[in-house]
Length: 498
Image (tube, rainbow, N blue to C red; front, side, top):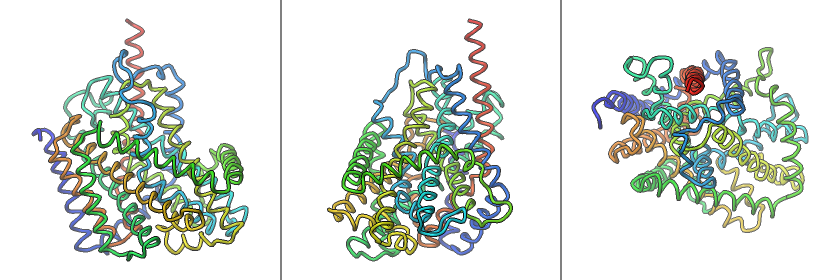
């Protein structure tokens, strides 16, 4: 490791290690403190999260349609490094990880069983609300956060030739050199947000794999098997990381996308196809029609904590997750124009997500509403078995469950592999090929956080712990937008002078 990267690496690694020790020694204390932070930030700053994420959406579209849309992320002669399918596969694998597979059935069914807006439970109205809000949570708002970070890093990395660090996106405001007292805390915060965010996704996937093994094979759903799954995943993603970006991650991303599309097509064809198409069309129309209403919906006059527990939690989660996804998206997007980048990142993965939700969530809703299958009750009892409970009512359910667990595994390996690569870059001054030892250290720490949080506090602990860095990082993202706009405007003026 280069000496000047030691501050970011050592501070981040020490803080994360202390976090792991705290979780192992006093899980109840960690859980209480994490919950207190989550409750305070979502209650006091919920309005800020909603306004910030809507601003990111509008800013992304502004850049795409403005004169800056033609700017290439690289030299003017550069062209994309990866094919469109491989590029989308990488975005899909890194950005969604296992989240969409985990929540694709679980979220619509939870909203159907316990709907917002005062809708009666398990009715036609609650089914519509469930699909609309599922589309909203996995749509362009989520990806606008990733787009901002990825675009800023890619612009400075490939257009300006500076290392791939979050702090370098602030150059137009703080200068190109020096001011380490500002730069280092920003990079350390980005590393901590990345590690906790990825560990959350890894932990969710481990819980879902164990839930699936229990549902399909009767294997006990307990900490011992979850630790075994964690160890197997650690070995697999560290092995993948030795092959580099153009082999392990590239091939796994193509496998992920192919396997996901295969499952999607099977469920679409074998499931209630017409109902899926009808519910997709209705939910898409309602999503577009109520876009701004859902974007800014709060309940200051009463009405429970649903918005905090779902929408605000989601926005905080993706903000905490964004340094990793953004840095990875930037790395694989060299040579694309800003317009290509924005539409590729902001439109295609969210479209895949809402189709996924329509197919899997729509099929589960149809089964409950018209065939009385009680999937919603099963999800309320154990959210990790949602997908497998639905597959019970499909032909070849055993094969579908095995393929789904394989998909979750490959998603987790790809996400964790990508994360160790990005963390290596972040803690080695933006090196495009970080050392193997640094990647191994981060890989082990990610697995350790996931393991101690699963054992100590389960899914809730995983979720709340990932949000510690979300609030300060929201401010960083807003400043990042201002800096990017200033840099683009300065470049445009220089080109006009030429």
